[in-house]
Image 1 (tube, rainbow, N blue to C red):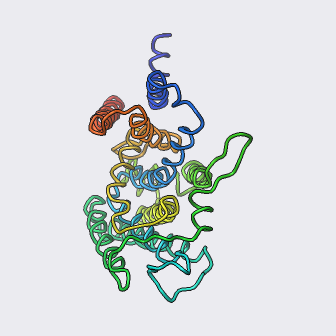
Image 2: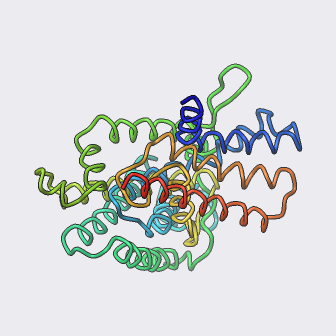
Image 3: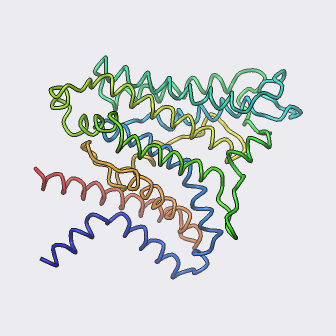
Length: 336
């Protein structure tokens, strides 16, 4: 009986055990990895990825998928960056645009993300197109829109730089001090978003409907849930989160190009799956998603920190993804 309890405890907390083991293994090789500097860097690099992964988690829990997330991040990064350059910058995207309220481009970027989420939701819910195909089409179309915008005169596909100091500090490089440790503003924003998403998942009707739809869509319909309406809302929220992530990514890196966000959706899906979001829908938690992102950030940053080849990092990441999906499918089969 005690053995079963231990096995159950390990099974339920496997994701957190993996994260701890990764940190311990890297720290044994180089103890300086446990310093405040590396911790800050890991959190900083994880921030936008957490927001993207939380958006993707909404879709995965309903039993769908979203391949357009990365390209929406790229488009919204370009939109916000193009409108928030310094007024005296030599290569301005909009030469005649003066200093505008910082919130306007941010709101516009989030709105653009929300609109593309709405488009995804309508295609999936109303036209019954499988989410994989619907979001694949949107992914390609969004990249085309972004490239056309990015290629406008006088920019002509030049990387957008010279972002305003207030924008970069508030949403990117700035931090809040707590004793001897400062937390980047971007990390604080990611934490706030994670808390709000947790509330939606666990304390709202939309969250309950989301899990019901992912668990059994037909049963959800029979129970009176408007599946189409809820799916549209869910895709809209996900799109808005991608838009916010695009803004933060532009602020964090100090610029943007039309290639920003490329393949981010695959990293987000991988983080969700490793974090316990079921590939069959109906299961997933915010702490699991956040931990999944942290695991991949620790792999990328930590293994680079100790000098491990990027190729080995890809092998390790791929192995973890396959193991997580196999573990998920095994649990699903056992429940059936």
